[in-house]
Length: 160
Image 1 (cartoon, helix red, strand yellow):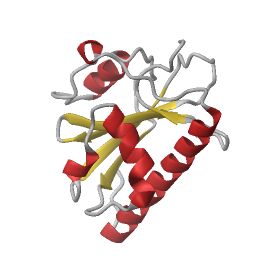
Image 2 (tube, helix red, strand yellow):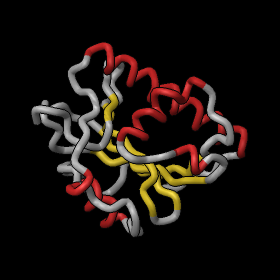
Image 3 (cartoon, one colour):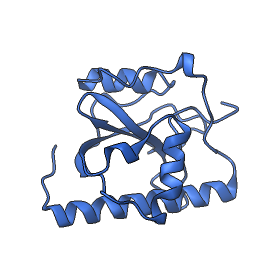
Image 4 (cartoon, one colour):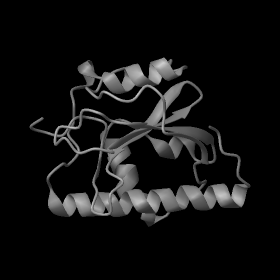
């Protein structure tokens, strides 16, 4: 499923999604239960050459996640040309994983959302997002869409 939106609605959607992610990250940092875990660079899957759905699933499996084979959603997003302070927490999360979203400012990217089936707490409905520019993963996160949910990097939470 691909969504085509006018530029104004697309920019608003990206801004709204970033704000939701930042709010979830702020809630998570307050709880401290599942802060982003940094994985060793040698054990991480390569973000380049991710061309197909199978490649995206394999990329997530490289982080230890089992996901449903088909994405829950596929969206085209526009990375804003200028990012204000409302993006700071989200950009910091991506940077901590080795991703630099700022170099993709003004670019159209695809975001694929998958349902994780093996989250360590057993919580259902946890999702993994992957953002791709062409055939390269440029960002991603794991989140709970629940009202009191969480947001962290692609790596498994510490202690899992």
